[in-house]
Amino acid sequence: MPFLLASVILGWAHLIAVMRSLQNGGPPHVLHIPALVGFMLASLDTFYLSPLNSRGIPGDARNWVPAGVLIVGLASIAVFGWKFYTIYRDGGDQSRAGWRSGISLACVVLGIYMTGAAIDHFVFFSDSNKTGTAAPDLLGVKDVQCPQMVLIRITETGADFRCPVSISFGGMSSTPFVPWPSYVTGHSVEMKAAIESASREADRHDSK
Image 1: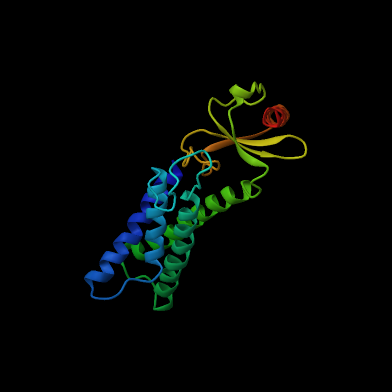
Image 2: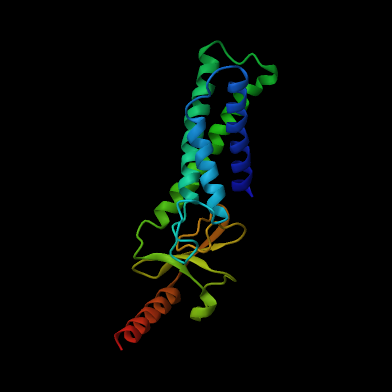
């Protein structure tokens, strides 16, 4: 699970950097703090404990996990990228086997991955009127082979869908966060037709 591994590594990297700065008597780099805040926000909302979700966990609750992930990713790219740059600006990595620059570069790469995962989520759910989740089995859709809720985006020709295969965050929200590569993609004509049919039936029921 690349995403969980990246999250743990970056969380520890920022925490260790802050602790070392405090032990050396100096203030930590300012970007470590928002990174840790973003990590805590994503962690709390994973268990629906975020103070920003005061409404609890209804189906339309806001999913703050991708926002926290984006903060962690961007902060990691900036702060560890700067550390990597300053190491070679000041004469190169003098540490044993170059571990200081190696760790900084690895954290930059992981930050890029997490930023990309968050952006991928926001792009997929960019239009709230055409995106959401659906259960293929309940809708009677035959061309989507997924045993659980799928993420959907309605298009002109059908519905693009993502089937989670390992991890998913915020499953009780209308926009679950399923980071790449934890999903398989597909396109379904039946899904769009089933959703539109269910929507028309709901409208007729409400009009009575």
